[in-house]
Amino acid sequence: MVEGVHWSANTEPHPARDAALRSMSAVARGAKDEWVALFAPDGVVEDPVGPSVFDPDGCGHHGHDGIAAFWDLAIAQADRIEFHIHDSFAAGREVANVGHISTYLPDGNAMDAEGVFVYHVDESGLIRSMRAFWEFDRALNTLRRAE
Image (cartoon, rainbow, N blue to C red; front, side, top):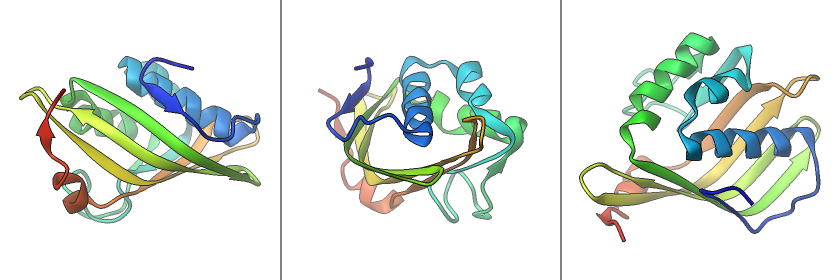
């Protein structure tokens, strides 16, 4: 499909699924500006949902400036990010993708975040929200030397 995106789930076209695939592709390729442009001006990223090292208040990253700042804080710190999606459920203007994200770190380690990744799009296909349900401690327990 796309380098860095391993998709073994339903591929039936759906606006939210299509936006999710574009989002994952941009992240896997390191295309920050392209990724931010996929979001509505008032879009929100919650990755992970709730308080975390990336979002101590658990309120999410809002608007293009907040989403770009999240990229710099979290995504830009990785050497490489790969998506492995095993199932995908689309309904209404949303899709819930099930799988894991492998993050390869500059120190030669890697870790996996298993979770459910929910995208909600507006009528034009822009992402209104991306909510990633995964557990930081559980991901840390997968920390290993990268292959």
